[in-house]
Amino acid sequence: MGEAIVITSGKGGVGKTTTTANLGTSLALLDKKVCLIDTDIGLRNLDVVIGLENRIIYDIIDVVEKRCKISQALIKDKRFDCLYLLPAAQTSDKTALTPEAMKSIIDDLKPDYDYILIDCPAGIEQGYKNAVSGADKALVVTTPEKSSVRDADRIIGLLEQEDIEPPNLVINRIRTHMVKNGDMLDVDEIMQILSIDLIGIVADDDDVIKASNHGEPIAFQPNTKASIAYRNIARRILGESIPLQSLDEKLTFIEKIKKVFGKN
Amino acid sequence: MAANRYITIKGTRDGLTLFMNDQCAFDDLLQELENIISTKHLVEDEQSIRIKIKLGNRYLDDQQEEKLRELIDKQNTFIIEQIESDVILKETALQWKEETEIELHNKIVRSGQILKVTGDLLLVGDVNPGGKVMASGNIFIVGHLRGIAHAGVHGNDKAVIAASYMAPSQLRIADIISRPPDQEKDGVHMECGFIDSTGKQIIMDRINVLAKNRFDLNAFERRIING
Image (cartoon, rainbow over all chains, first blue to last red):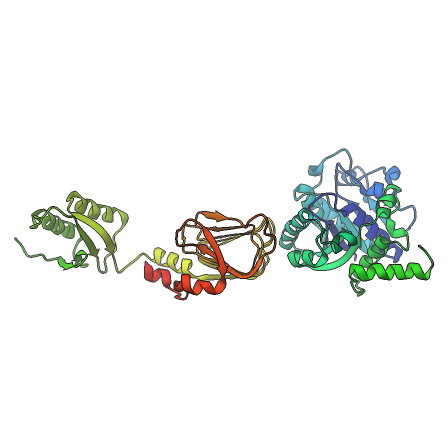
């Protein structure tokens, strides 16, 4: 029986979809059977980020409205046999999906997959409610910006009212040099406000955007800061205890590796 | 003139105190009062007399009280200072009890959430930016106050707000609102806010100042005693 994890943030543009794609990839790399569900009806992105846009025939609304079977709508990844995507519809809007329908889809998928990752749309309205229903766990993504932390706080408050485990936090797009100069919120400050468990920190990396544009999640690349961070999060989801390295240590650690391999 | 059967009058330094018999019918009481007022030897009409009315174990509803006041107001010589009864409605008593109780909450009040209590609020946890706590009495926060705290919601301007870490976006007491100066980013530890002696603004000070300014905080049934 699989586990359904919703990835949410409240604010838009903090990296929900990127995180979903990369965690899915990382879990698949660890030989887990993973299904990604895009619930951002009308503004679907996950298929683009993961490079499966041109394979879409049916979408989640077709499943809900019984125009196809769920197995027909699922797209197998071009790189893995154990990674699947259930794409969102681009033509309907968020009211086409209901929490009940979402729940029944997830219940149908659970026996066949180890992990079901649900990519939540921005906002706290219908789309959010759809995405959260049926989830067992939640990951809240935030960036080290005040506005994003504020929205994450709001979302955590809403998640606490749902019947799911206490959410975990992913801090995305941290820029070490800005934190060092005191121009960016640091991890401690964010944790002090949100006070939930931290499951990973992802450094800001140009390669992430580059990889997304190629439809190839960064987690495929074995040695960038961001991909290591995503893979660590995936392993923590599996229950491994990997110490959260402070960003400084992480950097020097990576630099050390680079030095060992003679890069840079 | 018949002797006063139901009303005893006592003169004090501050005026007159009327002790009303609490066993007789209310109408009898009114009648006698009317007699007293109209016939009484109140010739010295230069100064109005302040009177207190003690009802004993008699409860007056609003209508009855209105009648009583009307009767006395007819005669311009009297000013009612106080109508006091030894009994109150259960409802009122419960309300008093509620208002003086301290309600304990153990949670984080996050952005967009409102925690509202009757009486005093003791919050063990933070109030995050965008969160709001409201109480008809005082607010005590064991944690960080980063959002809005509104004490004395129903107009109690004696209410105070205290927190182990104060970095509020706004403090409100009764109908006065204040916010920290724009250049101030960092919060302060163990501080409290209360309305100063002018009654116009909220000032912040260290928590131990409260003992001096609001010594009645110590008395638990303070507001019942104060009526």
